[in-house]
Image 1 (tube, rainbow, N blue to C red):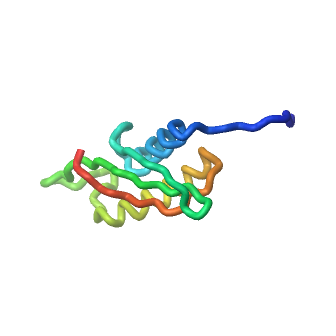
Image 2: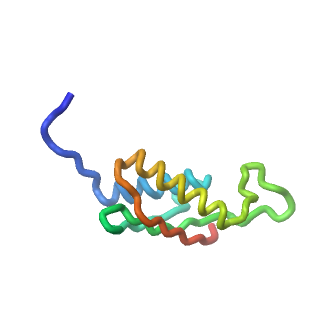
Length: 102
């Protein structure tokens, strides 16, 4: 069914959605990522701060988190781009990820 009108997503809702998608992509608890959004040549540009827990020192992490950190970030970037588009309907441009400690 088609109805006349339009749908708007507020900037806060969009930012919170991208933050939630980032947490899922990194496998971290909700709230451990913060985002700022900007225009990236007509696409949605994302700057993320992701707070990661310290890696286990004596045992391998069974969740696959024992991969090198930059590899995890590259995989998460792809997931964020795909899931972000699926959820918001917007094409994501450049996704800058800054890693910090939880």
